[in-house]
Amino acid sequence: MNNILRWYNRNRKMFWIVILTIIAVIVLIQTLNSYYKNNTKDKSSSTNASTTTYNNNYSIITGEEIDETVSDKSIDLIKNFFDYCNSKDIESAYNLLSTECKEELYPTRDDFIQKYYNRIFTEKRSYDSNLWITTSNKNTYRVEIMSDLLSTGQRDYMPIEDYYTIIYENGQYKLNISNYIGKEDIDISTTQNSISVKIISKKMYMNYEIYEIEVKNNTGSKLIFNTKENTKSIYLQDKNELKYIAFLNEIPDNEFEILNGMTKTLEIKFNRGYKPTTKIEKIIFEDISISNNQQKQNIEMKF
Image (cartoon, rainbow, N blue to C red; front, side):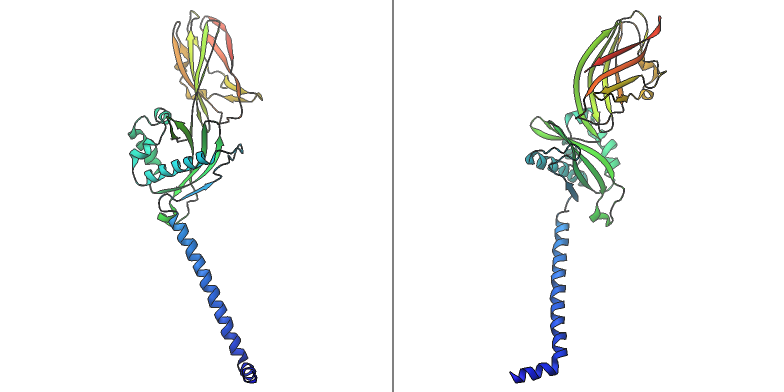
C-alpha cells in the first residue's frame, strides 16, 4: 500500500493526464456514434421524396381532428404522387387525381404534363405538408414544394406553394391539386320581371370561387345582365354581411348580352377564399338593364 502511495505521489500529474485523456476519447466516440446514427436515419428516410409532415391529425385553421386511418391514407397518397412524379411515372401520378380534378383542370394526360408536371417537376422535388382545413368529406393540405435537399445539397428558401385536397371517390382516396378544392351543386332559382336566374353549382379554389349561373331572358327585349358600369354590382354576402365581389373585368361585355327567348350559362368568379365554416346567405345581381326600359333592375337570391 505504501508503495502505491509513493508511486502515485511521484506520478500524480501524469496519472490524471492519462485518466482525463481516456474520458475525453470515450466522450468523443459516443458523440460521433450519435451523429452517425442520426445522419444515417435522416438519409434512409429520404430515399424517395424527402418530406416533412406536420399536424397529421389536426387542422391548422379549424383545429378539428381527423381519423388516424384517414390521415395515414391521405399522407401516403401525397407521398405516392410525389414519388411517381419524381420517378417520371406520369401515368401513375395522373391516375391518382380525382375525376373532378381531371375534368376541371387536366382532361387529358397531356394537359397534366404541360400544365402541371412540366411546370413543377423541372427537377426532383421534396415537400412539406400540413393539414390545413378539414370538413366532413374532404381534407385540404398546404404543400410546400421544394428542390430536393439530397439532390442539390442546398435548402430551397423559395418553395412553390400549393394546396392538395383529398376526397373519397368510388371507394378510393383521390387528389385535387393546383389549389382546386372541389365542386358543390347548389340548384336554386328565381324569376323576376321575366328574367329567370338559376344557380347551378360552384367550384371552390383556395383563393376564389366560380359560380355557374344560368340566365333566361323572357322580357321581350335584349337583356344586358350586367352593364359593368359598377364594378361591384355582382357579389356574394355572408351571415356577417361581408361582401365578396365578382371579377367582372374577366368577363367580356358580350357575355352579359342575352337576346329575348335565349338562355345563357355564365361562369362568374368571386374573390372569396375557401371558408367552409362561413356560410354564404345570398347572391346579389345589380345593374341589370333591359333595352326598352331605362330603369336598372336588381335580383337577390337567398341560399
